[in-house]
Length: 231
Picture (tube, rainbow, N blue to C red):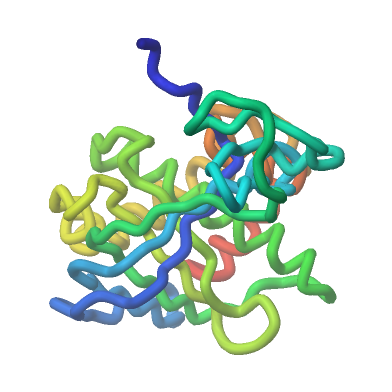
C-alpha cells in the first residue's frame, strides 16, 4: 500500500518540559540570551485538518471525515461494512512523543502594537533561526522544528527548538553549544536574501511545513529583531 499523504496543517507544542541538563547565558551586544537544553521533553503534534477545522469521528464505528462542511447524515460502518452508524463528533488528531529541546530566552521584546504583529515577528525570527541551524550545523531541516512560547501577550520572548527525531538524535546539545554562531547566521540569512524584506521565500524563512505562516513571515522583521538582539 502507498504511504498516507503528508500534510503541512499541523502544530507542535511542548506539553511538559524535560529535565534540564545544561544552561548558560550568552551576552550578545549587551543583551542576555539564556540557552537551556532539556532532555526527554514531552511534545504533542496536532493535525488540524483542512482549513484548520479538524476532523469528525463516528462515536460508534470510528469512521472519519474532515471538518469541512456538514457531517454526513449516514455512512457505511467501517467495522461491519453495512450502512448506518452513530453521530459524528469533532476531534483534533494528534500524537505525543518525547525528544530533546533547546529553550532560548531572548532579552529583547517582540516589536508590535498587537499580539498579531508580535506573533508575525516571533515566527519570522523562529524560522530564520531554524534555517540557520540547518545551514550552519548541517542538520536536515526536517529534523528540527520550533515553537514560540513566550512574549506575545506578556513576559519576555522565548523560543523552543525541537529535535524532531523521537528520543532525540543529539541535535539539541549541538545547537546549544553553537548558539552564538547560529544566531549570527540567522541575521545573515534575514539580511542578505534577495526576496523583498516585507516578505520571505524558500531560501530564507519558508518551508513546506510552515505554510500556515507564509503570508506573515517577513525576513525584514527578522532582520530588525536580530540586529537589536546583537547590536
